[in-house]
Amino acid sequence: MEMFITRNYYRLLQIFFLLLSVSATKALAQDGEMVISGIYKGANLYVENPMLTDGSFCVSKVIINHSEMQKLPKASAFEVDMAHLKKGQEISVIIFHSNDCVPRILNPNAIRDKGHFQFVELDITEDGLEWETSGEAEEGNFVIMRFEHNSWVEEVIVQGLGTNKLNKYNYKVLHHSGENKYKLKYLEVTGKIYNSSELMHTSSSEQVKFYPNRVTKLLSFTRPVKYEILDQYGKVVLNGNSKEVDCASLNGGKYYFVNYDNKTERFFKK
Image 1 (cartoon, rainbow, N blue to C red):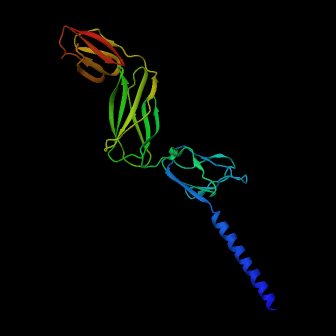
Image 2: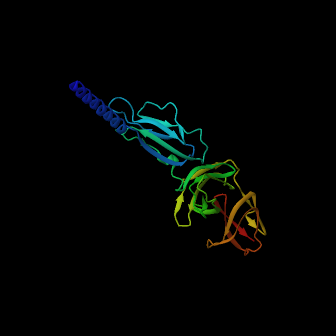
Image 3: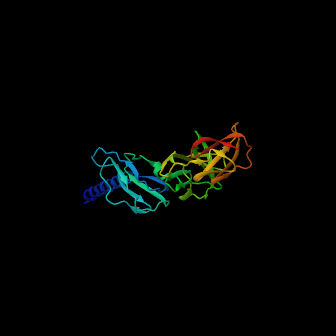
Protein backbone atom coordinates (compact mmCIF):
# COMPACT_ATOMS: atom_id res chain seq x y z
CA MET A 1 0.00 0.00 0.00
CA GLU A 2 2.81 2.39 0.89
CA MET A 3 4.60 1.58 -2.40
CA PHE A 4 1.37 2.33 -4.36
CA ILE A 5 1.05 5.77 -2.68
CA THR A 6 4.71 6.53 -3.36
CA ARG A 7 4.35 5.63 -7.03
CA ASN A 8 1.24 7.82 -7.36
CA TYR A 9 3.02 10.65 -5.60
CA TYR A 10 5.92 10.58 -8.09
CA ARG A 11 3.48 10.31 -11.01
CA LEU A 12 1.66 13.43 -9.78
CA LEU A 13 4.96 15.25 -9.45
CA GLN A 14 5.85 14.30 -13.04
CA ILE A 15 2.50 15.62 -14.32
CA PHE A 16 2.94 18.82 -12.30
CA PHE A 17 6.40 19.53 -13.73
CA LEU A 18 5.20 18.65 -17.26
CA LEU A 19 2.35 21.16 -16.99
CA LEU A 20 4.73 23.74 -15.56
CA SER A 21 7.10 23.18 -18.50
CA VAL A 22 4.28 23.54 -21.05
CA SER A 23 3.10 26.72 -19.34
CA ALA A 24 6.61 28.19 -19.40
CA THR A 25 7.01 27.27 -23.08
CA LYS A 26 3.74 29.01 -23.92
CA ALA A 27 4.83 32.10 -21.98
CA LEU A 28 8.10 32.23 -23.92
CA ALA A 29 6.23 31.83 -27.21
CA GLN A 30 4.04 34.89 -26.66
CA ASP A 31 4.10 37.41 -29.51
CA GLY A 32 6.40 40.37 -29.56
CA GLU A 33 4.97 43.81 -30.37
CA MET A 34 6.07 46.51 -32.78
CA VAL A 35 4.26 49.86 -32.52
CA ILE A 36 4.39 52.74 -34.98
CA SER A 37 2.31 55.89 -34.70
CA GLY A 38 1.87 59.09 -36.69
CA ILE A 39 -0.65 60.69 -39.02
CA TYR A 40 -2.43 59.05 -41.94
CA LYS A 41 -1.67 60.97 -45.12
CA GLY A 42 -3.22 58.74 -47.76
CA ALA A 43 -0.49 56.10 -48.11
CA ASN A 44 -0.46 52.55 -46.75
CA LEU A 45 2.36 50.91 -44.81
CA TYR A 46 4.32 47.98 -46.25
CA VAL A 47 5.72 45.30 -43.94
CA GLU A 48 8.51 42.82 -44.56
CA ASN A 49 7.31 39.53 -43.04
CA PRO A 50 10.06 36.86 -42.72
CA MET A 51 9.23 33.16 -43.01
CA LEU A 52 9.97 30.96 -39.99
CA THR A 53 11.66 27.53 -40.08
CA ASP A 54 8.31 25.73 -39.70
CA GLY A 55 6.94 27.44 -42.84
CA SER A 56 4.74 29.95 -41.01
CA PHE A 57 5.28 33.71 -41.15
CA CYS A 58 6.60 36.15 -38.57
CA VAL A 59 3.55 38.43 -38.16
CA SER A 60 0.52 36.94 -36.44
CA LYS A 61 -1.77 39.95 -36.05
CA VAL A 62 -2.01 43.67 -36.92
CA ILE A 63 -4.09 46.18 -34.95
CA ILE A 64 -4.93 49.54 -36.56
CA ASN A 65 -6.37 52.05 -34.10
CA HIS A 66 -7.81 49.25 -31.88
CA SER A 67 -9.28 47.35 -34.88
CA GLU A 68 -7.73 44.09 -36.03
CA MET A 69 -6.68 43.88 -39.67
CA GLN A 70 -8.76 41.22 -41.42
CA LYS A 71 -7.32 38.55 -43.73
CA LEU A 72 -3.66 38.91 -42.82
CA PRO A 73 -1.72 37.78 -45.94
CA LYS A 74 0.56 34.76 -45.61
CA ALA A 75 3.41 36.27 -47.57
CA SER A 76 6.96 37.54 -47.11
CA ALA A 77 5.69 41.12 -47.51
CA PHE A 78 2.26 42.67 -47.23
CA GLU A 79 0.39 45.98 -47.29
CA VAL A 80 -1.39 47.42 -44.27
CA ASP A 81 -4.57 48.80 -45.81
CA MET A 82 -5.60 52.06 -44.12
CA ALA A 83 -7.93 53.43 -46.79
CA HIS A 84 -10.81 53.49 -44.29
CA LEU A 85 -9.09 56.26 -42.32
CA LYS A 86 -9.40 59.98 -42.94
CA LYS A 87 -6.41 62.03 -44.02
CA GLY A 88 -4.94 63.85 -41.06
CA GLN A 89 -6.25 61.28 -38.59
CA GLU A 90 -3.85 60.15 -35.89
CA ILE A 91 -2.93 56.50 -36.26
CA SER A 92 -1.34 53.77 -34.18
CA VAL A 93 -0.39 50.42 -35.71
CA ILE A 94 0.56 47.46 -33.50
CA ILE A 95 2.23 44.49 -35.19
CA PHE A 96 2.27 41.24 -33.19
CA HIS A 97 5.02 38.85 -34.21
CA SER A 98 6.87 35.75 -33.14
CA ASN A 99 9.78 36.17 -30.78
CA ASP A 100 11.89 34.22 -33.27
CA CYS A 101 11.87 37.04 -35.81
CA VAL A 102 11.54 40.78 -36.30
CA PRO A 103 9.31 42.23 -39.05
CA ARG A 104 10.36 45.46 -40.75
CA ILE A 105 8.25 48.43 -41.84
CA LEU A 106 9.55 49.37 -45.27
CA ASN A 107 8.11 52.89 -45.50
CA PRO A 108 7.72 54.36 -41.98
CA ASN A 109 7.70 57.91 -43.40
CA ALA A 110 4.25 57.18 -44.87
CA ILE A 111 2.87 58.07 -41.42
CA ARG A 112 5.84 60.11 -40.27
CA ASP A 113 5.65 61.25 -36.69
CA LYS A 114 3.43 64.29 -36.31
CA GLY A 115 6.19 66.13 -34.52
CA HIS A 116 8.15 66.51 -37.75
CA PHE A 117 7.14 68.92 -40.48
CA GLN A 118 6.38 67.46 -43.89
CA PHE A 119 4.91 68.59 -47.19
CA VAL A 120 2.20 65.96 -47.64
CA GLU A 121 0.76 67.00 -51.00
CA LEU A 122 1.66 69.64 -53.58
CA ASP A 123 -0.43 70.55 -56.60
CA ILE A 124 -0.46 73.27 -59.24
CA THR A 125 -3.29 74.19 -61.59
CA GLU A 126 -4.17 77.06 -63.89
CA ASP A 127 -5.76 78.75 -60.86
CA GLY A 128 -2.73 78.53 -58.57
CA LEU A 129 -0.96 76.48 -55.91
CA GLU A 130 -2.42 74.03 -53.41
CA TRP A 131 -0.52 72.22 -50.68
CA GLU A 132 -1.05 70.15 -47.54
CA THR A 133 1.32 69.80 -44.59
CA SER A 134 1.60 68.03 -41.25
CA GLY A 135 3.68 68.67 -38.15
CA GLU A 136 3.79 72.46 -38.35
CA ALA A 137 5.36 74.46 -35.54
CA GLU A 138 3.73 77.54 -34.05
CA GLU A 139 4.36 80.82 -35.90
CA GLY A 140 5.85 79.11 -38.96
CA ASN A 141 5.67 80.77 -42.38
CA PHE A 142 5.62 79.61 -45.99
CA VAL A 143 7.50 81.44 -48.73
CA ILE A 144 6.28 80.86 -52.27
CA MET A 145 9.16 81.13 -54.73
CA ARG A 146 8.77 81.66 -58.48
CA PHE A 147 11.45 81.06 -61.10
CA GLU A 148 11.60 84.00 -63.46
CA HIS A 149 14.29 85.81 -65.43
CA ASN A 150 16.68 82.91 -64.68
CA SER A 151 16.52 83.18 -60.88
CA TRP A 152 14.30 82.27 -57.93
CA VAL A 153 12.38 85.25 -56.55
CA GLU A 154 10.05 85.56 -53.59
CA GLU A 155 6.41 85.69 -54.67
CA VAL A 156 4.65 86.00 -51.30
CA ILE A 157 4.82 84.96 -47.63
CA VAL A 158 1.89 82.92 -46.26
CA GLN A 159 1.32 82.58 -42.50
CA GLY A 160 1.17 78.94 -41.38
CA LEU A 161 -1.75 77.57 -39.37
CA GLY A 162 0.66 76.10 -36.81
CA THR A 163 -1.12 72.83 -35.92
CA ASN A 164 0.24 69.27 -35.86
CA LYS A 165 -2.65 67.92 -37.89
CA LEU A 166 -3.12 68.09 -41.66
CA ASN A 167 -3.28 71.70 -42.86
CA LYS A 168 -4.47 72.76 -46.30
CA TYR A 169 -3.54 75.91 -48.23
CA ASN A 170 -4.20 77.46 -51.60
CA TYR A 171 -2.81 80.55 -53.24
CA LYS A 172 -3.96 82.10 -56.50
CA VAL A 173 -1.14 83.06 -58.85
CA LEU A 174 -1.04 84.79 -62.20
CA HIS A 175 1.02 82.43 -64.34
CA HIS A 176 3.29 83.47 -67.15
CA SER A 177 2.33 82.16 -70.56
CA GLY A 178 4.10 78.88 -71.28
CA GLU A 179 6.18 77.12 -68.63
CA ASN A 180 6.01 78.17 -64.97
CA LYS A 181 8.09 76.85 -62.08
CA TYR A 182 7.49 77.26 -58.33
CA LYS A 183 8.70 75.88 -55.01
CA LEU A 184 7.81 76.44 -51.36
CA LYS A 185 9.91 77.01 -48.26
CA TYR A 186 8.65 76.45 -44.73
CA LEU A 187 10.43 78.52 -42.09
CA GLU A 188 10.22 77.64 -38.41
CA VAL A 189 10.87 80.29 -35.77
CA THR A 190 13.91 78.23 -34.74
CA GLY A 191 15.45 79.05 -38.10
CA LYS A 192 15.00 75.56 -39.53
CA ILE A 193 14.01 75.53 -43.22
CA TYR A 194 12.12 72.84 -45.15
CA ASN A 195 12.07 72.95 -48.96
CA SER A 196 9.42 71.43 -51.17
CA SER A 197 10.07 69.78 -54.50
CA GLU A 198 9.69 72.01 -57.57
CA LEU A 199 6.28 72.41 -59.18
CA MET A 200 5.95 72.95 -62.92
CA HIS A 201 2.93 74.07 -64.91
CA THR A 202 2.49 74.95 -68.58
CA SER A 203 -0.09 77.70 -68.78
CA SER A 204 -2.66 77.74 -71.57
CA SER A 205 -2.92 81.54 -71.47
CA GLU A 206 -1.88 83.55 -74.51
CA GLN A 207 1.48 85.29 -74.62
CA VAL A 208 1.41 88.83 -73.27
CA LYS A 209 2.56 91.72 -75.44
CA PHE A 210 3.11 95.37 -74.62
CA TYR A 211 2.62 98.56 -76.64
CA PRO A 212 3.65 101.10 -77.77
CA ASN A 213 7.42 100.82 -78.26
CA ARG A 214 7.68 104.61 -77.90
CA VAL A 215 5.83 105.67 -74.76
CA THR A 216 4.55 109.16 -73.99
CA LYS A 217 2.63 108.40 -70.79
CA LEU A 218 0.97 104.94 -70.70
CA LEU A 219 2.55 101.58 -71.40
CA SER A 220 -0.10 98.87 -71.90
CA PHE A 221 -0.16 95.06 -71.79
CA THR A 222 -2.62 92.81 -73.60
CA ARG A 223 -3.73 91.39 -70.22
CA PRO A 224 -2.92 92.08 -66.55
CA VAL A 225 0.60 90.94 -65.73
CA LYS A 226 3.30 91.28 -63.11
CA TYR A 227 5.97 93.68 -64.39
CA GLU A 228 9.18 95.53 -63.53
CA ILE A 229 10.57 98.54 -65.36
CA LEU A 230 14.34 99.04 -65.12
CA ASP A 231 16.59 101.88 -66.14
CA GLN A 232 19.75 101.46 -68.22
CA TYR A 233 21.71 100.50 -65.08
CA GLY A 234 19.31 97.68 -64.13
CA LYS A 235 17.69 99.58 -61.26
CA VAL A 236 13.96 98.87 -60.79
CA VAL A 237 12.13 102.19 -61.15
CA LEU A 238 8.53 100.93 -61.41
CA ASN A 239 6.82 97.62 -60.63
CA GLY A 240 3.35 96.26 -60.11
CA ASN A 241 0.68 93.89 -61.36
CA SER A 242 -1.75 95.43 -63.85
CA LYS A 243 -2.66 95.99 -67.49
CA GLU A 244 -1.36 99.57 -67.70
CA VAL A 245 1.66 101.43 -66.35
CA ASP A 246 1.80 105.18 -65.83
CA CYS A 247 5.26 106.15 -67.12
CA ALA A 248 4.83 109.94 -66.73
CA SER A 249 7.44 110.03 -63.96
CA LEU A 250 10.16 108.47 -66.14
CA ASN A 251 12.78 110.72 -67.67
CA GLY A 252 12.26 111.29 -71.39
CA GLY A 253 14.74 110.62 -74.15
CA LYS A 254 15.92 107.29 -72.69
CA TYR A 255 15.44 103.57 -73.22
CA TYR A 256 14.00 101.44 -70.43
CA PHE A 257 13.71 97.69 -69.98
CA VAL A 258 10.50 95.94 -69.00
CA ASN A 259 10.41 92.49 -67.36
CA TYR A 260 7.07 90.77 -67.83
CA ASP A 261 5.64 87.34 -68.67
CA ASN A 262 9.10 85.87 -67.96
CA LYS A 263 10.80 87.86 -70.72
CA THR A 264 12.63 91.17 -71.03
CA GLU A 265 12.08 93.78 -73.74
CA ARG A 266 12.77 97.50 -74.07
CA PHE A 267 10.90 100.66 -74.97
CA PHE A 268 11.76 104.33 -75.51
CA LYS A 269 10.31 107.04 -73.26
CA LYS A 270 9.63 110.17 -75.29
